[in-house]
Amino acid sequence: MTAQADPASRFSAGRGAPLRVERLTKDFGATRAVDDVSLACEGGEFLALLGPSGSGKTSILMSIAGFEAPTAGDVWIDGARVTDLPPYRRDIGIVFQSYALFPHMSVRANVGFPLRMRRVPDARVTAEVDAALDLVQLAEHAHKLPSQLSGGQQQRVAIARAIVFRPKLLLMDEPLGALDRRLREDLQVEIKRLQRRLNATIVYVTHDQDEAMLMADRIAVLRAGRLEQIGDPEALFEHPANTFVADFIGQTNLLRARVVTISTAGCTAAIGDHPALDVTAPARGASVGSDVYIAVRPERVRLHRPHRDRPAELTGVVNDALYGGGVRLYVVDVAPGISLKARVPIDGDGERFAPGDRVAIAWERAHARVFADTPPIA
Image (cartoon, rainbow, N blue to C red; front, side, top):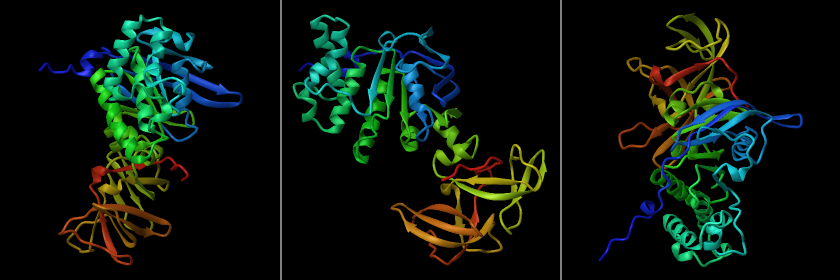
């Protein structure tokens, strides 16, 4: 019996094209949606544009696609300047949240549409569509209309249509936003699998930090049209550039403190009436007596019963203790108006605390960051 060919071997897209965005600005009347953003994406890389609503991520994507003309700046794809080219001349595939499938066309016809628009011969269209449908595991649904498919299946059709002509670059605008959580998680895995097997370059817009962390090789964090930080997920999580990134990438405690001393080696800062903490890194822009924010992840916080022989950064009183499957989430009041969260794994030997308990709070010094900028408003 002859083994079936791997769909990826029948559908090899080669190495994806590099992308470069240079000093991109986009105005809509008096509103500046994108403000002097520069970023680059290597060939075969998965880059996520992450930010809240109004951060400019979709405007950047639409400028890369050619659907929006930038007010200033340039877009380069595969070493060629495409700023003034229409979308159909940029050789890009696009997947939208709304799927944008033709309702009167079958799955096969939808996927083959980009090839027919390019006047590809019928025999090749059939072969390419078959390979693309095999790749997204929809070959048995080729004859159906979009209305006969589930949301996840429709999204896979949209992906097949976007890759069938082997674009240099694949753009995805919140493609999973309309799906339920379980299906979204399944498709996250499928999209990442496809990207790796095809070695495709993907620029992916999302407001979901978990989605970006799971899928992207690098993440560009945007706020109010400006690029706050770009880096791989671990770098952004462990070394955020400011309080916005620290708060947006994963959960973090931002504890207001007052600078007591500053030296070239670091600084000390006091939270409420607690003794000053020795912080290993000085806060840029801080001065003695100024307010700073100590950032520490809930996962990095340890709790124990107060004891003089066990080190602690702070003490506090448990306000809430919430069960979360494999962890317990504790909310601890440490000073008037200041509380922190601790996410503690549940195990048979671990201490358990109840609201009203006084606890000691500890963390590794290397896991704390100090910022002088004001945290974002929740």
